[in-house]
Image (cartoon, rainbow over the protein chains, first blue to last red):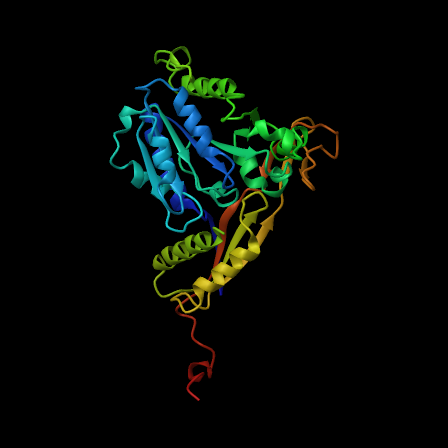
Length: 233
Length: 129
């Protein structure tokens, strides 16, 4: 019996495809963001309210992943931007191959912002690189404020934590301070925003974060979004 | 429960490595799983065994080495293991440190049997009796 050393990532094939996607996004000046949360934390509602604030004709596209149904794609398509549903048919996460396939008939030069809404799951999507510039984890106040300690992998990898549904804080035993502290115990540098998409609280800060990141991707382009953002009635 | 697709990725990689070494049989694969990797070692072993059973790779064994999170202190440079998410440097008390390990999900080694290795006397008849 001989032992052969083999330093190789288990998901090296996914990582290879993700690296290819990342370099295409960079080439086309696209900011790609991967949204991850447990089911029902409010990713789709946050994206709806975000799309509602973007100017018509903005170069934005959305991929949304679910195990079954195209309900989310239909919700998100109402805002006039290209939206495509990825139905995983059982898989609990999106992987780079699914994203590559979903993008195959889109012309990437038409976009400079791509939202990917992952399958609702706080565990599995953390392992799969989709070529995104940043993972964003959404944690709603109707969940436990100890979620970062229970599911550290995603909080460790996410650049931004969005604490969602904060309009419900008076009705739930959720400590904002504990949630922040727990997230920072796992990932001291994580950025944190507090948002209620339905009550439009904190949306300006979130859209500001988004605009700042878009400007980083396209330093030479004309200032894209903030100045043109249309108000939502 | 993505351990099933993780286990499948390991098997695909083992097949690819075996294809590069004609005639050898892979007996065992060693993987390293960090505690921040989001992969549960028991679920991975369970999925791995389920996929190997009855496959061309049977009886392939899996050894999982789990890796704790380690940080390097930005002040004094010492390396420390993180227990219960405590990121304070045990040597100097600094709270500034960088993660250096704990998110691994890697294949570390293969144990292979060379084709030349003649079977031990008598083993060739095993199962014929």
